[in-house]
Image (tube, rainbow, N blue to C red; front, top):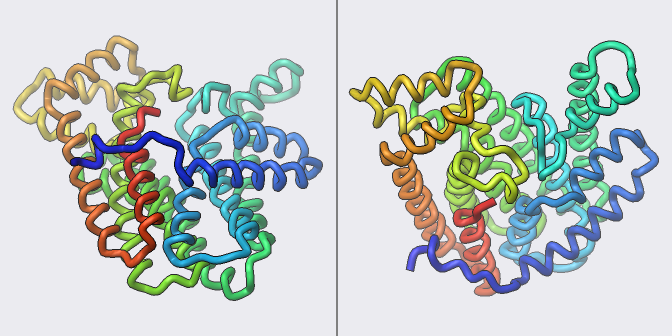
Length: 358
Protein backbone atom coordinates (compact mmCIF):
# COMPACT_ATOMS: atom_id res chain seq x y z
CA UNK A 1 0.00 0.00 0.00
CA UNK A 2 1.25 3.50 -0.80
CA UNK A 3 2.50 5.66 2.04
CA UNK A 4 0.04 8.30 0.83
CA UNK A 5 -2.93 6.10 1.69
CA UNK A 6 -1.69 4.23 4.77
CA UNK A 7 -1.16 6.86 7.46
CA UNK A 8 -2.19 5.62 10.91
CA UNK A 9 -3.92 8.52 12.66
CA UNK A 10 -3.92 7.00 16.16
CA UNK A 11 -1.98 8.61 18.99
CA UNK A 12 1.67 7.61 18.86
CA UNK A 13 4.93 8.29 20.67
CA UNK A 14 5.25 11.30 18.37
CA UNK A 15 2.37 12.90 20.26
CA UNK A 16 3.92 11.96 23.61
CA UNK A 17 7.11 13.80 22.63
CA UNK A 18 5.05 16.89 21.73
CA UNK A 19 3.93 17.15 25.37
CA UNK A 20 7.54 17.04 26.60
CA UNK A 21 8.66 19.59 24.03
CA UNK A 22 5.87 22.06 24.73
CA UNK A 23 6.78 21.94 28.42
CA UNK A 24 10.43 22.65 27.61
CA UNK A 25 9.46 25.51 25.29
CA UNK A 26 7.27 27.06 27.97
CA UNK A 27 10.04 26.83 30.57
CA UNK A 28 12.68 28.27 28.23
CA UNK A 29 10.55 31.27 27.28
CA UNK A 30 9.31 31.86 30.83
CA UNK A 31 12.91 32.10 32.08
CA UNK A 32 13.58 34.83 29.48
CA UNK A 33 10.33 36.78 29.59
CA UNK A 34 12.01 39.80 31.19
CA UNK A 35 14.73 39.99 28.54
CA UNK A 36 13.80 42.34 25.66
CA UNK A 37 10.21 42.07 26.94
CA UNK A 38 8.29 43.49 23.98
CA UNK A 39 10.19 41.40 21.45
CA UNK A 40 10.06 38.33 23.67
CA UNK A 41 6.29 38.70 24.10
CA UNK A 42 5.74 38.53 20.32
CA UNK A 43 8.09 35.57 20.07
CA UNK A 44 6.35 33.77 22.90
CA UNK A 45 2.91 34.35 21.41
CA UNK A 46 3.99 33.04 18.02
CA UNK A 47 5.61 29.90 19.42
CA UNK A 48 2.92 28.99 21.91
CA UNK A 49 0.06 29.84 19.53
CA UNK A 50 0.53 26.60 17.64
CA UNK A 51 2.73 24.96 15.07
CA UNK A 52 3.33 21.36 14.15
CA UNK A 53 6.71 21.03 15.95
CA UNK A 54 7.90 19.04 12.95
CA UNK A 55 11.60 19.91 13.17
CA UNK A 56 12.18 19.03 16.82
CA UNK A 57 10.11 15.89 16.37
CA UNK A 58 12.31 14.66 13.53
CA UNK A 59 15.38 15.54 15.61
CA UNK A 60 14.02 13.51 18.52
CA UNK A 61 13.51 10.47 16.33
CA UNK A 62 16.94 10.97 14.79
CA UNK A 63 18.28 10.75 18.33
CA UNK A 64 16.25 7.63 18.99
CA UNK A 65 17.37 6.13 15.66
CA UNK A 66 20.99 6.69 16.66
CA UNK A 67 20.50 4.75 19.89
CA UNK A 68 20.07 7.79 22.12
CA UNK A 69 20.10 7.18 25.85
CA UNK A 70 19.48 9.38 28.95
CA UNK A 71 19.59 12.16 30.02
CA UNK A 72 16.34 12.61 28.09
CA UNK A 73 15.54 16.00 29.61
CA UNK A 74 18.69 17.56 28.18
CA UNK A 75 17.88 16.25 24.72
CA UNK A 76 14.33 17.61 24.84
CA UNK A 77 15.67 21.00 25.93
CA UNK A 78 18.11 20.90 23.02
CA UNK A 79 15.21 20.34 20.60
CA UNK A 80 13.77 23.71 21.68
CA UNK A 81 16.49 25.24 19.50
CA UNK A 82 14.82 23.90 16.36
CA UNK A 83 11.48 25.51 17.13
CA UNK A 84 13.22 28.82 17.77
CA UNK A 85 15.08 28.51 14.48
CA UNK A 86 11.76 27.92 12.75
CA UNK A 87 10.31 31.04 14.37
CA UNK A 88 13.23 33.08 13.05
CA UNK A 89 12.48 31.79 9.55
CA UNK A 90 8.73 32.43 9.82
CA UNK A 91 9.04 36.01 11.08
CA UNK A 92 11.63 37.01 8.49
CA UNK A 93 9.79 35.18 5.71
CA UNK A 94 6.56 37.04 6.53
CA UNK A 95 8.37 40.38 6.26
CA UNK A 96 9.92 39.44 2.91
CA UNK A 97 6.65 38.09 1.51
CA UNK A 98 4.49 40.87 3.01
CA UNK A 99 2.31 38.19 4.62
CA UNK A 100 -0.44 39.73 6.76
CA UNK A 101 -1.27 36.67 8.85
CA UNK A 102 0.44 33.73 10.49
CA UNK A 103 -1.34 30.91 12.32
CA UNK A 104 -4.62 32.76 12.03
CA UNK A 105 -3.35 35.96 13.66
CA UNK A 106 -1.60 39.10 12.40
CA UNK A 107 1.99 38.39 11.46
CA UNK A 108 4.63 39.87 13.75
CA UNK A 109 5.43 42.86 11.54
CA UNK A 110 1.73 43.62 11.17
CA UNK A 111 1.23 43.40 14.93
CA UNK A 112 4.02 45.90 15.60
CA UNK A 113 2.79 48.22 12.84
CA UNK A 114 -0.74 48.15 14.25
CA UNK A 115 0.57 49.14 17.68
CA UNK A 116 2.53 52.00 16.11
CA UNK A 117 -0.66 53.30 14.51
CA UNK A 118 -2.72 52.90 17.70
CA UNK A 119 -0.17 54.81 19.78
CA UNK A 120 0.24 57.48 17.09
CA UNK A 121 4.01 57.16 17.19
CA UNK A 122 6.30 59.11 14.88
CA UNK A 123 7.59 58.07 11.44
CA UNK A 124 6.39 55.09 9.37
CA UNK A 125 4.28 52.39 11.00
CA UNK A 126 5.24 49.94 8.27
CA UNK A 127 8.96 50.58 8.70
CA UNK A 128 8.67 50.24 12.46
CA UNK A 129 6.74 46.99 12.10
CA UNK A 130 9.23 45.51 9.67
CA UNK A 131 12.22 46.59 11.75
CA UNK A 132 10.83 45.27 15.02
CA UNK A 133 9.89 41.98 13.36
CA UNK A 134 13.42 41.57 12.03
CA UNK A 135 14.66 41.98 15.59
CA UNK A 136 12.20 39.34 16.82
CA UNK A 137 13.58 36.95 14.20
CA UNK A 138 17.13 37.82 15.22
CA UNK A 139 16.25 37.21 18.87
CA UNK A 140 14.79 33.81 17.99
CA UNK A 141 18.00 32.88 16.16
CA UNK A 142 20.17 34.02 19.08
CA UNK A 143 18.02 32.13 21.58
CA UNK A 144 18.13 29.04 19.37
CA UNK A 145 21.89 28.90 19.94
CA UNK A 146 21.32 29.53 23.64
CA UNK A 147 18.82 26.67 23.85
CA UNK A 148 21.25 24.22 22.31
CA UNK A 149 24.35 25.14 24.30
CA UNK A 150 22.57 25.49 27.68
CA UNK A 151 20.45 22.34 27.41
CA UNK A 152 22.75 20.32 29.64
CA UNK A 153 24.23 18.12 26.93
CA UNK A 154 27.63 16.54 27.42
CA UNK A 155 30.55 18.33 25.78
CA UNK A 156 31.00 15.38 23.44
CA UNK A 157 27.33 15.37 22.34
CA UNK A 158 27.31 19.12 21.80
CA UNK A 159 30.49 18.92 19.75
CA UNK A 160 28.98 16.20 17.54
CA UNK A 161 25.80 18.22 17.03
CA UNK A 162 27.50 21.51 16.19
CA UNK A 163 28.35 20.58 12.59
CA UNK A 164 24.79 19.73 11.51
CA UNK A 165 23.48 22.72 13.50
CA UNK A 166 25.79 25.11 11.65
CA UNK A 167 24.89 23.55 8.29
CA UNK A 168 21.16 23.77 9.03
CA UNK A 169 21.26 27.50 9.80
CA UNK A 170 23.30 28.31 6.71
CA UNK A 171 21.21 26.14 4.37
CA UNK A 172 17.99 27.71 5.64
CA UNK A 173 19.26 31.20 4.87
CA UNK A 174 20.72 30.19 1.51
CA UNK A 175 17.46 28.52 0.50
CA UNK A 176 15.51 31.66 1.35
CA UNK A 177 17.88 33.73 -0.78
CA UNK A 178 17.50 31.34 -3.70
CA UNK A 179 13.73 31.71 -3.36
CA UNK A 180 14.07 35.49 -3.62
CA UNK A 181 16.43 35.16 -6.58
CA UNK A 182 14.02 32.87 -8.42
CA UNK A 183 11.38 35.61 -8.41
CA UNK A 184 13.83 38.40 -9.26
CA UNK A 185 15.44 36.47 -12.13
CA UNK A 186 12.21 34.85 -13.35
CA UNK A 187 13.84 31.46 -12.85
CA UNK A 188 11.30 28.87 -14.01
CA UNK A 189 13.07 25.53 -14.38
CA UNK A 190 11.74 22.62 -12.36
CA UNK A 191 15.30 21.69 -11.42
CA UNK A 192 15.89 25.09 -9.80
CA UNK A 193 12.52 25.04 -8.04
CA UNK A 194 13.24 21.63 -6.51
CA UNK A 195 16.71 22.82 -5.42
CA UNK A 196 15.10 25.74 -3.61
CA UNK A 197 12.66 23.33 -1.95
CA UNK A 198 15.54 21.06 -0.91
CA UNK A 199 17.47 23.90 0.74
CA UNK A 200 14.72 26.21 1.97
CA UNK A 201 12.54 23.48 3.45
CA UNK A 202 13.80 19.90 3.20
CA UNK A 203 17.22 20.50 4.72
CA UNK A 204 16.15 22.37 7.84
CA UNK A 205 12.74 20.70 8.23
CA UNK A 206 13.61 17.01 8.00
CA UNK A 207 17.13 16.13 6.83
CA UNK A 208 19.26 18.24 9.20
CA UNK A 209 17.03 17.78 12.26
CA UNK A 210 17.41 14.01 11.80
CA UNK A 211 21.15 14.52 11.34
CA UNK A 212 21.32 16.68 14.46
CA UNK A 213 19.46 14.14 16.59
CA UNK A 214 21.53 11.24 15.30
CA UNK A 215 24.73 13.20 15.96
CA UNK A 216 23.63 13.89 19.55
CA UNK A 217 23.25 10.13 19.99
CA UNK A 218 26.62 9.32 18.41
CA UNK A 219 25.07 7.33 15.52
CA UNK A 220 27.40 5.66 13.06
CA UNK A 221 27.90 7.07 9.56
CA UNK A 222 25.73 4.47 7.83
CA UNK A 223 22.70 5.31 9.97
CA UNK A 224 23.28 9.05 9.46
CA UNK A 225 23.55 8.63 5.69
CA UNK A 226 20.32 6.62 5.49
CA UNK A 227 18.46 9.08 7.69
CA UNK A 228 19.66 12.03 5.65
CA UNK A 229 18.59 10.37 2.37
CA UNK A 230 15.19 9.63 3.86
CA UNK A 231 15.02 13.18 5.24
CA UNK A 232 15.91 14.83 1.94
CA UNK A 233 13.19 13.04 -0.02
CA UNK A 234 10.49 13.35 2.65
CA UNK A 235 11.46 17.00 3.14
CA UNK A 236 11.09 17.86 -0.54
CA UNK A 237 7.77 16.00 -0.61
CA UNK A 238 6.72 18.04 2.44
CA UNK A 239 7.42 21.28 0.56
CA UNK A 240 5.58 20.07 -2.54
CA UNK A 241 2.57 19.31 -0.36
CA UNK A 242 2.93 22.78 1.15
CA UNK A 243 2.81 24.29 -2.35
CA UNK A 244 -0.47 22.50 -3.05
CA UNK A 245 -1.94 23.53 0.31
CA UNK A 246 -1.03 27.16 -0.37
CA UNK A 247 -3.02 27.13 -3.61
CA UNK A 248 -5.86 24.76 -2.76
CA UNK A 249 -6.01 24.68 1.03
CA UNK A 250 -8.61 25.99 3.46
CA UNK A 251 -7.54 29.34 4.91
CA UNK A 252 -9.57 28.75 8.07
CA UNK A 253 -7.42 25.68 8.71
CA UNK A 254 -4.04 26.98 7.51
CA UNK A 255 -4.31 30.39 9.16
CA UNK A 256 -3.15 32.12 5.97
CA UNK A 257 -4.96 33.38 2.86
CA UNK A 258 -5.19 30.88 0.02
CA UNK A 259 -3.02 31.58 -3.01
CA UNK A 260 -0.26 33.64 -1.37
CA UNK A 261 2.41 31.96 -3.51
CA UNK A 262 0.45 32.92 -6.63
CA UNK A 263 0.06 36.53 -5.49
CA UNK A 264 3.78 36.77 -4.71
CA UNK A 265 4.87 35.33 -8.06
CA UNK A 266 6.63 32.36 -6.45
CA UNK A 267 8.34 30.00 -8.91
CA UNK A 268 7.33 26.80 -7.12
CA UNK A 269 7.71 23.34 -8.67
CA UNK A 270 3.94 23.38 -9.20
CA UNK A 271 4.18 26.57 -11.25
CA UNK A 272 7.29 25.36 -13.11
CA UNK A 273 5.43 22.24 -14.24
CA UNK A 274 2.42 24.33 -15.27
CA UNK A 275 4.58 26.70 -17.33
CA UNK A 276 6.20 23.77 -19.10
CA UNK A 277 2.83 22.19 -19.89
CA UNK A 278 1.44 25.51 -21.13
CA UNK A 279 3.91 25.61 -24.01
CA UNK A 280 1.95 26.00 -27.25
CA UNK A 281 -1.14 27.21 -25.37
CA UNK A 282 -1.09 31.03 -25.61
CA UNK A 283 -4.12 31.67 -23.43
CA UNK A 284 -2.77 29.48 -20.66
CA UNK A 285 0.66 31.12 -20.89
CA UNK A 286 -0.85 34.60 -20.67
CA UNK A 287 -2.82 33.71 -17.56
CA UNK A 288 0.21 32.19 -15.82
CA UNK A 289 2.40 35.17 -16.78
CA UNK A 290 -0.21 37.61 -15.52
CA UNK A 291 -0.26 35.80 -12.23
CA UNK A 292 3.54 35.68 -11.91
CA UNK A 293 4.45 39.12 -13.20
CA UNK A 294 1.59 41.59 -12.83
CA UNK A 295 2.32 42.48 -9.21
CA UNK A 296 -1.41 42.64 -8.42
CA UNK A 297 -3.37 39.40 -8.56
CA UNK A 298 -7.14 39.45 -8.08
CA UNK A 299 -9.21 36.72 -6.43
CA UNK A 300 -10.68 35.96 -9.85
CA UNK A 301 -7.20 35.43 -11.31
CA UNK A 302 -6.30 33.11 -8.42
CA UNK A 303 -9.45 31.07 -9.10
CA UNK A 304 -8.67 30.92 -12.83
CA UNK A 305 -5.07 29.83 -12.19
CA UNK A 306 -6.21 27.17 -9.74
CA UNK A 307 -8.51 25.71 -12.40
CA UNK A 308 -5.75 25.91 -15.00
CA UNK A 309 -3.24 24.10 -12.77
CA UNK A 310 -5.68 21.20 -12.59
CA UNK A 311 -6.50 21.34 -16.29
CA UNK A 312 -2.85 21.28 -17.34
CA UNK A 313 -2.19 18.25 -15.15
CA UNK A 314 0.32 20.16 -13.00
CA UNK A 315 -1.44 19.21 -9.77
CA UNK A 316 -1.52 15.53 -10.74
CA UNK A 317 2.18 15.72 -11.69
CA UNK A 318 3.09 17.17 -8.29
CA UNK A 319 1.04 14.49 -6.54
CA UNK A 320 2.93 11.85 -8.52
CA UNK A 321 6.26 13.46 -7.60
CA UNK A 322 5.27 13.50 -3.92
CA UNK A 323 4.42 9.81 -4.08
CA UNK A 324 7.70 8.99 -5.81
CA UNK A 325 9.73 10.90 -3.23
CA UNK A 326 7.80 9.26 -0.40
CA UNK A 327 8.67 5.90 -1.91
CA UNK A 328 12.40 6.60 -2.31
CA UNK A 329 12.44 8.02 1.22
CA UNK A 330 11.02 4.74 2.52
CA UNK A 331 13.64 2.78 0.60
CA UNK A 332 16.38 4.81 2.29
CA UNK A 333 14.78 4.27 5.69
CA UNK A 334 14.55 0.53 5.06
CA UNK A 335 18.35 0.46 4.71
CA UNK A 336 18.88 2.08 8.11
CA UNK A 337 19.83 -0.17 11.02
CA UNK A 338 17.38 1.32 13.52
CA UNK A 339 15.04 -0.22 16.12
CA UNK A 340 11.66 -1.36 14.82
CA UNK A 341 9.68 1.06 17.00
CA UNK A 342 11.77 3.97 15.68
CA UNK A 343 11.27 2.85 12.09
CA UNK A 344 7.53 2.66 12.71
CA UNK A 345 7.42 6.22 14.04
CA UNK A 346 9.54 7.57 11.16
CA UNK A 347 7.13 5.97 8.70
CA UNK A 348 4.24 7.64 10.53
CA UNK A 349 6.02 10.98 10.51
CA UNK A 350 6.66 10.71 6.79
CA UNK A 351 3.00 9.91 6.22
CA UNK A 352 1.90 12.95 8.17
CA UNK A 353 4.34 15.16 6.32
CA UNK A 354 3.26 14.19 2.82
CA UNK A 355 -0.50 13.74 3.31
CA UNK A 356 -1.32 16.67 5.58
CA UNK A 357 -3.94 19.29 4.67
CA UNK A 358 -2.65 22.19 6.81
